[in-house]
Amino acid sequence: MKTMNRRSFLKHSAVAAAAVSLPAYSWARVPGANDAIRVGIVGFGGRGKDHIGGMRSLAKQDVRIVALCDVDDKILRAGCESFSQRNEQVGAFSDIRKLLEQDDLDAITIATPNHWHALAAIWAVQAGKDVYVEKPVCHEVWEGSQLVKAARAHKRIVQAGTQSRSSFAIKEAVEWVRGGNLGKILLARGLCYKPRTSIGKVDGPQPPPPNVDYDIWCGPAPMEPIRRKQFHYDWHWFWSYGNGDLGNQGIHQMDIARWFLGEAELAPRVWSVGCRLGYEDDGQTPNTQIVYHDYPKAPLIFEVRGLPKDKSHQTEKGWNAGDMDRFPADEKLKGGSVCVLVQCEGGYVFVPNYSSATAFDMEGTQVKQWSGAKDHYENFIQAVRSRKASDLNADIQEGFISSALCHTGNISYRLGKHTAAAEIREKIKADKDALNTFERMQQHLQANSVDLNLTQATLGEFLKMNPRKQKFTNNERANTLLTREYRKPFVVPEKV
Image (cartoon, rainbow, N blue to C red; front, side, top):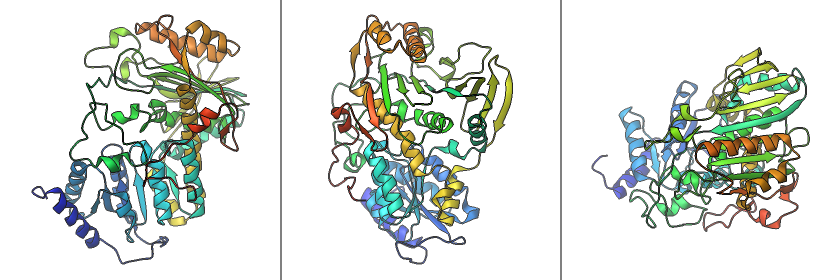
């Protein structure tokens, strides 16, 4: 393996794929309760490694990884070598289209960059495969809706990678709060205060890594010149491929907050304010942002902060999670940096992770606690066997709505303009929670030597939406950002 060139490696991989094939079945084979579930992993340079570990942990349930797919030849080689060292044989593919042609494949997991999620999943369900797709499940709103339609039309099992949905603890907390035990919900707040340092600046377009098939990597997105030092991961901060931290880490907390509110559709009104300040780099997405989803019963406010609590924590080596702000700042109250807080008439619920929650009264005294979660991958496999989408903890519809909340917030931001801090305050002053959130953001930036009275933030458009039609009603330009122009042949189909 170590001495093979790329061509001979891929040729060998095709042979390996045939060698590990189970008895041939129709492409529409439906796995039964006792059949082996044969899985392919698509994209495993980052989060996909966890997919491999998660699926391998289910080996006793007759779950077998039979194929790996990645456009990075170096990653693909290393992955196959790891399986070979364990005497586990897998097929290797650099093109997902070739992978999906395989008859001896029941399901795939997808952990590619965001811009590939929806198209890869749609192609998979059209090929008769079940799908576990990472968050956000789509890069644009329209393609996420198409994915939901495809899953239903082809009767495939499609799970979103929002693993908090497999926490029975958070589910119990949601039911307890909705039962009125803390009174009416006043506000759900999601926080993503996560350290994000500068990605640096390049002098000009960079060449793609020689081991990457850049055409397939770009897929449905524009094949743009590369303007980042780190090819992998830093695509998150470019609009053509990523969705900022709102659609990266933030989707998890957005999903939990919406879960508590019990909202099944997009918010009828949304606006955002933010900036990318504190350093100068090539990134495009905001490192500081507020998104306000104006649901009728109670608002969902989301906050993103990538800078530390103050300038003293900014070092040449960057900063870490311990350097970030927390909310509430009052040490007497339980709060955090990457978390969800659900404020009610009689107290609040704090969700610090993917598997626990704690309720407090108005004085900050703990009144109830929940802890525990089941395996999200195992839940997917159980639904693959039962053939019931209702058995999924994170059905694709749930993943789509939470992903789309991130996207509509970003659409507001992208349509915005630089605005003086005083004008922003005047615009939102009627809503005390919105005003307080913005003023805290302004103080946070001031602590990092960013004065919004001198350097203006971007105030997004105040958008109105028809949640059923998933269309904005007051801004046609915003509607154009609900989708994109797909690059042939990597086109999300109109008819799925």
